[in-house]
Image (cartoon, rainbow, N blue to C red; front, top):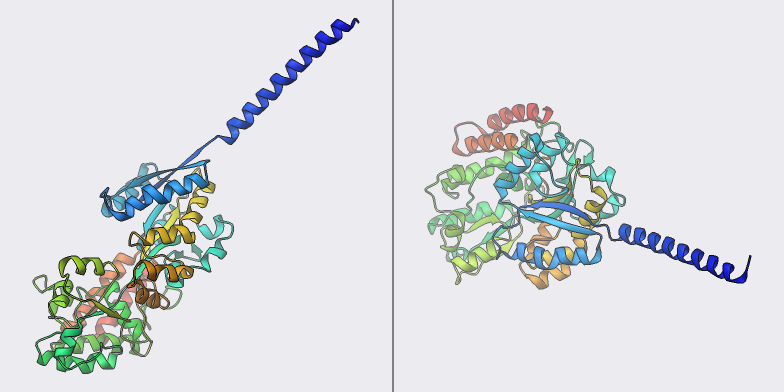
Length: 423
């Protein structure tokens, strides 16, 4: 074979190798440039100008996509009620998203239906994440031995008070114990001021008093109410509220009088000395009553200490998601200190316990809520919570109005709740 043939064959071989290399490179490039799109449903305020949606859209999601160029987030905002309706209809026959910002009371409902994936089984490193969040917020994801989500943002109720109303009655500091609240009631009534006001008797309203009184709604595994809801300590806590109501220290707003002054107006106007409410009230008062100086302290302590109730939202991955790995990556990012702190700028309280120093710099009023969250507890994580809540609320209202004795009202309610817990 001549030298020129060797050259020609060599050139052909080189060309073939080059083509093969180019093809392989193209395949690798195609694989590396493949983008997974996950759908994220949430009920952050749907107003385009809302701080939550603005920060999520312009800062948080773009940062995630920059760090993870192989994942895109298709966020779909809903009104709160529309989200629940969409979720329910999609379970029945529609298409579910990959990730959802779920109200905490929805988690056990949809976990029971098999809609939410058990993250403690799905996510590597799940236990590590649980160690940096508030225990009460984490507990909202629990259902029958597994955790079906992680807390995303949180809140709780603290005591808010009108210092001028207290001072007018000769009281120099807010009531920080059950005993002080009861003692202050007579002094405040003499000045025409209610010692305390609230807008209902459901779990959100009543559980802080029950828990702080050393009582409980159920046992620790959420399987039984009898012996707990009607225990001496629970009965005593509810009876205290009933006694204050009878003394004229609590207005009938608590038992459903829609014509009564609401807690916001009543506190600012000095009609109510104290209320329990959450961090969203600061901007509300600042706008409606700019000259009113809102002050806060912990929920009044009883035999059980100062214990409040957990609110907020969880983040979940659906069982039907075809992109669970990408969803997990997004969930981890949303729980990162950076993302949690970013959303705090928009008024969302983080669930991480290790970002508290940054929080008080963002909003100084976050401090009291951080402190209260250390002992705050979840409402009973049950698929039947709305029904349980209704039974509890009706029983407490009956006790406060005196249509039933507190013991009898709570005993009857406990029996009904036992059946709901078993369902």
